[in-house]
Length: 100
Image (cartoon, rainbow, N blue to C red):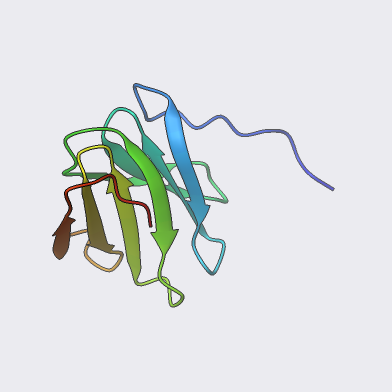
């Protein structure tokens, strides 16, 4: 049985992308505000905000082991974030819109 809905407050613009980590403990959201928020599924708290994109984020995907999160943006880049450090280890720059 599902509980009451949880409201996630952290983005200043609409959310365009949502994905769960493989262990279902983290929910990642990408927004028109250019940020990725990582949410603790149990508490509903934003545990990290990942910034680096210059335009809205419309696609997110965790690696199968949950150690990395890929984000794709209207700025025509995909970024690979380490979930261990929340650092941005790699930027993939393209001439066209990217999806992950």
